[in-house]
Image (spheres, rainbow over the protein chains, first blue to last red):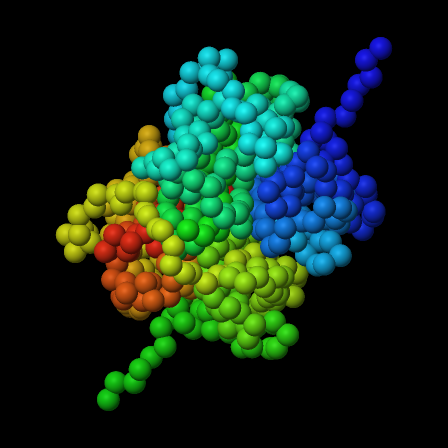
Length: 270
Length: 270
């Protein structure tokens, strides 16, 4: 007899509701990064905390997560607060903290979508089907990457000393084992790219996301239509400037739906 | 004898330090928008409040401002707090409030830049010199626009019923009267674009920024090198999705320096 098991992602973002907007979570070794947990899973936990708040209306429209300090292994508290509820949207603030103080601050906008003229102006990057591309095995020191099937179209993990003139990475990605795409999962995928400076410089160097902003372009029903399929994720940097670079990214459904656009600023030392 | 006068922008972001991280400001008619003040000037006031805090180190690296409700004419309070101070960067939260409650929340990262490999990957849009382009007279109902000299390269204010296939606007812009570019001014300019949906639909309709994120790529000295010259500002939308669209923008110095990249999500009704 096969017992249904909980997906490691659901375990990683599992929260106890401690009332008054406080949710308790626990880091898991599966989503560890080189220092602290994968930033994407922390962002996903914030989305989950807000989604579970009894006062929440609508679905995620925008999220900004600031990474103040690494989250230590162990328990953490997420405090969320509805700063304002309007007719069709709601503004949230959130703070993740541990015994040593705040580790993460965030703001979010949740909203209700309705019929309106709509259009996708961006063009989906050309990419052969994921099944025709080789799977990348995640490096040993980055445990969280093993939770994703990644098939790089271009801009894969750089070989040592191979500089690139472009910082663009495009890959097909889905959770491993497969899991239906929802807002926490899409949030985490918006941070799935290794630092752009590695690609440009052809080597790993100290780098870490300081602030991540994701805009969601679909509602839960459109997201669920993606099922467990791959999404096409593409990212590039615009400027590397004396210790900080920016990254701008798009996440596309295989059916051509632009699910999310995302931006981040990253600290680097070189 | 000519008396030196205070620039309207400096008046608009003038703050009294009320201690304990509270700063008091006052809206000014010069920076009024159709409802409440220009979002860019509110963002600029937040940057100014953090900059004036005695604990502040470094200069702006990232800023996210969420617009919860219009700021009413009159006084407002900006409460700023250093959530965490690291070796080379500092994380801030801010909240603008009035008697009726919070109107704006924000997070910011300030940091110290240092020597590191740097590169601008983005290409500056082609544009003829601002002096060769006609000046756009701001519409009567948008007072704040009169504080800027705007010379549209492409994507100017649309003529009635003229739809456009592209949401891209590129313009030369500087403060009027001229004023040396600093971080509050650059912050405000990152919100200088009229809503992209007007351009696509060829008409004005209800629209307003919900969340604005700006990444700064220069330090104060590099910024001051721009003097009072025009900057080239370019913005486009990626997706319009059932009531919310995103906008991504770049602000270039005339000398080819990418000063800032900026993103926002905008509510619209159509």
